[in-house]
Image 1 (cartoon, rainbow, N blue to C red):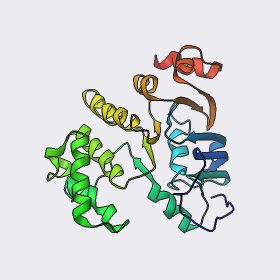
Image 2: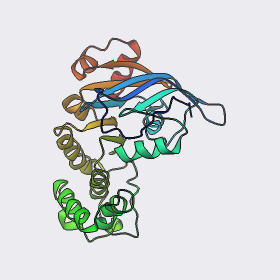
Image 3: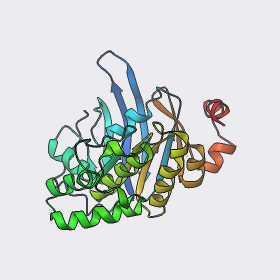
Image 4: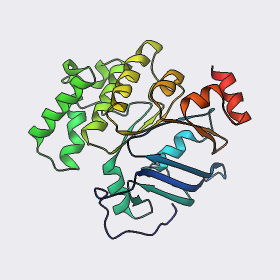
Length: 260
């Protein structure tokens, strides 16, 4: 991972910048020599919803996974909520405390109840009182529409319900940034809508969100900006209306011809 100048404090609470994520010249190679990210630049503002789209293999998921060090990178710089990302484990830990992530495959603990899935990290990582966290977790389950599922196990839920649990679990850590890595791609079509509705409600609360998705309706209605990636780099960044009706780049037009 690229080494950045370290700061004396790893707290982001006093970050005065409107930028929540700033990536400059990010390059990544896999051990087999595949060049996954090719000098990627992107900024995400506080409270902004950025949707990243692109063909399979374009580097979308790899890129957002660098934001919380789930993927390393070899060149460039990434700053998350005022914290420069490097190999310093203290910085990585500080960033992960502020960044929640919702995965394609839910990644819930199958041996824990829904409620325990939500409360585990806030109690162990943030050292918060268990009773306080349980109260918050029940409120979040109600918010995502599955309060009655608190005592069930993930295997007893539908895919859409499991993904809503995953969203509530991420929120229980009170993150400043939420990352979504194709959160509806593993769901049956009838379950997609319920998850997108939850995400749309979150966007209305001004939480900073970066969403990798192919859901065009969500991007048009919710995103502040749409990013197209192809072949490991950013091709175009535009507001939804411009991107979907009058893209500037020929590569964007070819992509939209395939999905619209």
